[in-house]
Image 1 (spheres, rainbow, N blue to C red):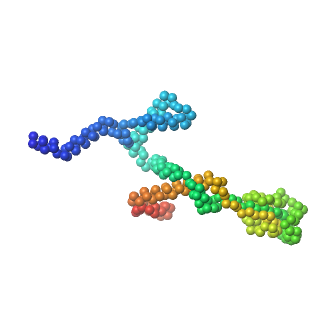
Image 2 (image 1 turned 180 degrees about the vertical axis):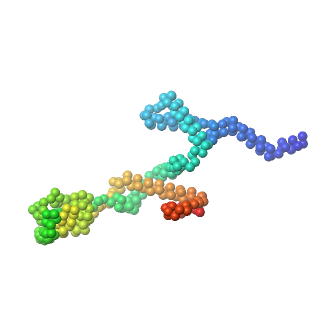
Image 3 (image 1 turned 45 degrees about the vertical axis):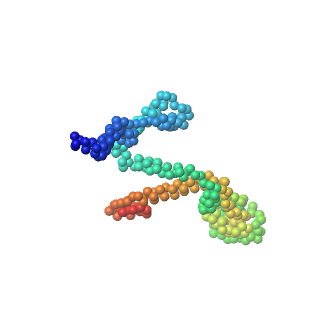
Length: 299
């Protein structure tokens, strides 16, 4: 009795008995409801979630039979996921790994999307990326065409003769009867440079960009032949009004926020890990292998 009395008063025995009772109760209740458990609990909140998803798809609430079908299907999915996980089917599966990464990154992106950019941030982004939102330059011109195929070796001389005549006549020279006939426009009103490119080619448009307004210059070559050109006007692109480009700026700004947040997340997480990279012995593979991350501990 003395031994049994001491045993009953022993704290270790109390701990073992209490632990056994808790374990027995846990098993009797189904072992919890997490992965590896045999207990599945469908809460009222989950049922409402399934019903609302059905309503969004079909534009009406589910019937009792349809709702039961949704719950039954969810139970089957939960059983399949738990059994597959217990069998290790989720390991080394590229699709599952990629989906888990996406879900983790979505959580980060949700925190970014919760705070829309301010007007000051919109303007700062425009100032930092002027080329992205700058409008197209505008240019107007007049031109007299000389056909290389028709003129042959005398084309350059004819172009020079016409240029001297145009320079004497000045910017208002009548060009209707000058040069060779073609389907090319003799005049382009002030408009986007892309109109010049469309009509005469990119190289011609680049040459025109260097011509000072108000002077007959030439010959300027295009894929069609030679041209005597007068730039009648040129307007530099004006900076956009923030209201005109706000949707585009918001999209670019939010995307940049997500990239920064994700990069910071991975840098913080990488600091917790020691990464060992075993490079292949093959020389070609070694050259093609990407560099190891700069942060964290990598061997």
